[in-house]
Each structure stands twice: as C-alpha cells, then as structure tokens.
Amino acid sequence: MTRLIVAAGGGGDAVAAAMLHAALYGGEDQAVILTYAWDRLLIDPLPGPRRPDDFTGLRRLTTAVWAVPAEARPIAPAGSTLPRLASELPHTLALLDPSGGAEGLTHQLEDLVSHMEPESIDLLDVGGDILAQGDEPTLRSPLADALTLAACSQVNAPVRLLVAGPGLDGELKSEDIGDVLGPVVHTFTASDASVISAVLEWHPSEATALLAAAARGVRGTVEIRDAGLPVPLTGESPRVHEVDLDDAISRNELARAIMATAHLDEAEAHSREICGSSEIDYERNKALWLNDRQPAKLDPAAIWPQLEAFEHEARAHGVSHTTFRRITEALDLSGSQRDDLRRLLIDSRPEQYDAPLWRIPDGT
Image: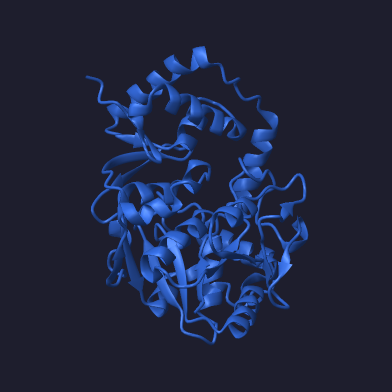
C-alpha cells in the first residue's frame, strides 16, 4: 500500500509529511512525498526552486518525475536539504519542478499518480497560507502553495487538502482562516513529533518546528523569522484540519489565476499583480543584501550579552520562545553559523532548550 503526500510549500512541509504519515497511516508501507527543492537562502544561496538539472544522482521514478535519494547532490553553488532528508526519513522523496508552471506540475502529478496508483493523495500545508486570498498584508510566500493547489485541483484523482497548525507560519492568523477550516482529522502528540525530532535538530523550518513543539505540549508566544513575527502556540496549534479543495480554490485568487501557466515566470507575474510581490523577488533582493554584508564572527564571549539583550527585549513583548534561526539573524550571524550557535547555546544552557525551540527565561 502506497500513499502520496504532496508537500504544498516544500521545505518544512515535507518534514511534516513524514509526521503526518506516521500519525495517520502508522505501520503501513513507505509514502512518496512529493516536494519542491526550494530552501531558505541559508541552505541554498540561489533564489527560487531547483530543477532536476541542478542535481546529480537523481533516480527517475516516471518519465516526468525524479526521486531524490540520499546519494543525490545539488550542483554548487546550489544547496538542498532533500538528500539529507532522504537519508533520515523512511520515505521516497520525489521532486516537484515548477519551472513549467501549474501545467507542468499537473503533468508531473498525473504521471506519478498513474504510475503509483496510490491508496490516497494528501496535499499538506503547515500554517494554512495555502488558504490566503492574496491581499493579506502579512502574506510573504504565496506562490509555492498556490502552484501546488492549482495543480492538485486539476488532477484526475481525489486529493484531500490538509492544513496542520493553522497560523504557525506567521503569515496568516488562525482566526483569519477559521471559516474555511473543516473537521479535525488528527491532533499531533509528542509521540508523533518524535518521528521527526532528529531531523529538526538540523532542518531550518520554523513552522514545522513550531508544529512539533505544539505537539509536545509547548504553549506561549514564539518569535520567528528575521522580522521577529510573534506566533501563538495554543491548543489549536497541533491540530490537522481537512479543507474542501474547491473552497480553497475559490478563496485563493492566485491559484485560480495561474492554473493555465506553462512557465514559472508567468506564475510570478500573476503573483506580483495579485499579491503585490513574489517570494522569488524577495529571495533575489535578500541574496544581494547577503552578498554585500559581512556577518559578525561567532565569538562565544560576545554572544552572551547580545543574547541577553535580545531575550530582554523579546520578554518585554510577551515572547516565551524563539527559534534558532531567529536568534542567528538577531545576533547578525550568517545562516552557516546557525548550527554552531545552536550547539553553543544548548550545551551552555540546556534548561532553556524546549526542543526544538529556545525558551526565553522569565527574568526572575
């Protein structure tokens, strides 16, 4: 028995897909997780998603779809978390290539479904920005989700849309999408989160880290991203909701607009027109900024006063936890220094490690 799970936005959604499979399908055979190679700039310095031509060692699954095995490697200077994920997750990772727009993705999905004849197809989004209307001022990354939604809505097979952890990506609040969320399919537990705990030791996804933390019972307000967005962890945070696919399409103006696109740049143009931006433009601009800046050196002696100043300010804003990505950027360090900083903090102050998050002390 084979299940197909489409990771709506790539990245952390692919990690969450492994947790979802274990929770819903338990001891069944491995899943195929279809995902983008679209990582944050701290992993991949090249803006936008990677194509099959950007890798060596891929394995052909169908005429249109490639698997990313553990031995695959991105061609420098590109980077990707997928080969390491393939080595640590008991599933087949298959590559979504959006270079052919929504039409190209639809063809890839149809080819894979025809080849696999899966028992089920789940489209998974952590946070729920796949339900964005497009005009929300906090929306930052609508294009990836809109592309997968558009493609899945055109596949000649039943697709179940699942939203895990409403609001956890910091782009939309859970109350913004509450009217379209359907029944709760599952509430993640600490046992479910243990399936991906080792991956979250190194994977940079913030939304999936928050989802795992919520599953472990962590509650409070988490500061994420370079902008320091506050995201609440509540009893709603570990829940997985089913959403009617037609309702999602009716709500997502960008997904409707890009259904017939045959190139990624066409889809980008629609994103700029409807949402006012494209996340690839954001990545292009940030990549230029990162190339021009000189990050601070990781000086352990200097870290502690900087960290305490950051924690003091966060605490004043009611923040109880943060991510290691947020600390890295707040201390003006580069993404390549994140792992070293993380080890330094955990080794020195293990009592503040509320895995996979960093707890802000209460100041007493």
